[in-house]
Image 1 (tube, rainbow, N blue to C red):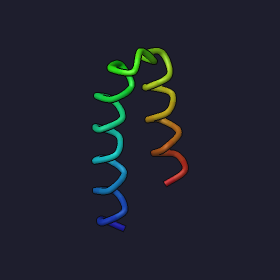
Image 2: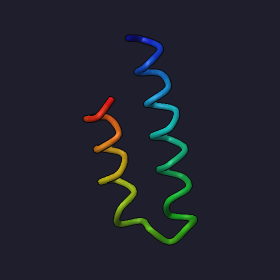
Image 3: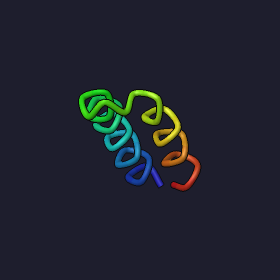
Image 4: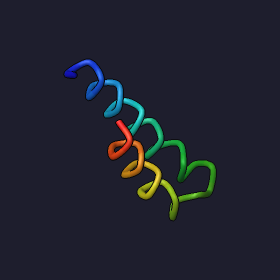
Length: 39
């Protein structure tokens, strides 16, 4: 369970950085939240 959380957090951070770079700032937070809810 801890490993899953660590992976989710890592992906969340990467996505939070990547999405604005890709010009999708609005959806980064939604996507991050969805990832956590699905995990």
